Amino acid sequence: MTLPILILAAGQSSRMRGTDKLLEQIDGVALLRRQIDAAGGVGDVFVALPAADHPRAALLQNTDAQAIIVSDAADGMGVTLRRAVHALPPCPSFMVLLADLAEITATDLQAIVNARKNHPDNLIWRGATAAGKPGHPIMFDASLRPEFETLSGDTGGSPILKAHRSQTHLVALQGNRALLDLDTPEEWAQWRAARRS
Image (cartoon, rainbow, N blue to C red; front, side, top):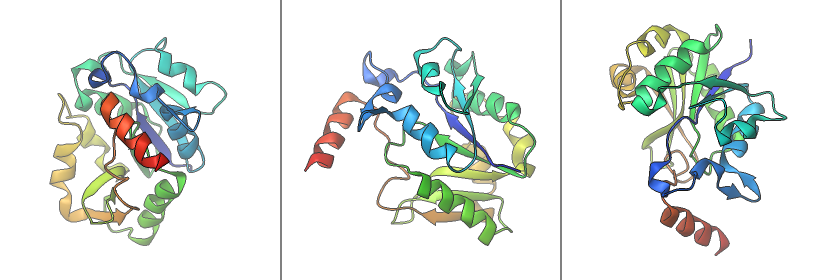
């Protein structure tokens, strides 16, 4: 059975002051499309979107990615996770990927998959920085799906992660990529400048 990979792309991108960070270009490709392409090499891709006619939806064209519409995504990440995980097909495990992690690659996603195979006694397999700070992406055992039904507000999956900290295996990814998200125009400008130097 193919691994479902859920990309969370239903947020408002409010700190970008009028532009959409998921439509920002990296090497000529929109960030969300880069994530879809990376995930598509590892599993079946599902993308949580705020509306079917949202501009982000166009980035799913000519891919095998499936949209999951979360019309009340503005109520918080917990709501998005609850609805989107509920919509995933039956599976032994599933991965959650934040759409705004600009440096995550297919190799990183595969490292999480490999960790599940090599450490099957855990319930959560989680990307971390090279220094060991927990981040993303995160793979969950399907036995945790009922716990997603209780999520609400903007706490995201924190209650689940806290409850199962002792059953979590961390996977060190290169540098800071497990945590590097770009939320403002200034952060994008700084990151692009650093890439060029």
